[in-house]
Length: 214
Image (cartoon, rainbow, N blue to C red; front, top):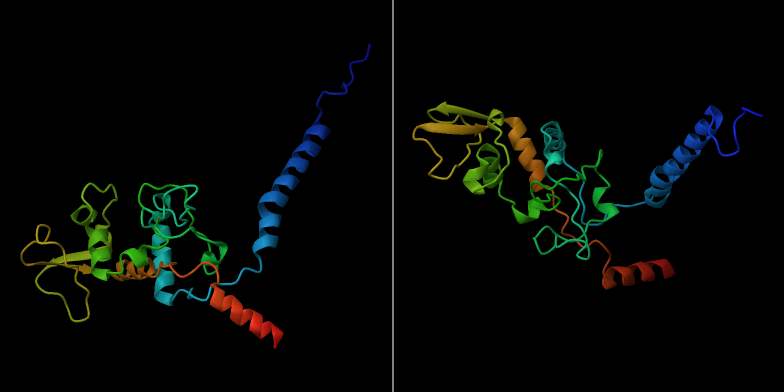
């Protein structure tokens, strides 16, 4: 009577080999293949690199966990009514050429922000919304960020940016001044605009074909 390992029983070697095979297959499917497909992706003509201030704002966005409540990936109309919500067309790989790391997000406690700069290009609105979200969006669950602002009595100093709050939220004799991190974050949000065409139009394709024949 043999007490050895049966044909279909597991030992340490089989477990290790099996785990390595599964890990290798997952790496090939989730890392290698997407890289090979997307490594030559070029930025669309309408996409501009982030400015230094926008990059600073992007770091503020990351540091404050905005990605945990907001996505940056509008979905196709066949999957969700994101376009009907005003969030823009479905995103494509080229929209993220300048994004490192990517901030696609998975939660939508708040709206998708990939095109927030097109929907709401007002700096005053964004600053006020960061300071007092419910003053601009009643019932909003977004937290306020008072530490990005300085509140004091009197007048603002030359060069400072004052938040123009709605009358019901403004206190007499008091000014709310935006700090650099708030200004940078707003510049980043206003720069989120992917409303350019995702694919080349017929005119662009005709120009490409003409150039290729020359």
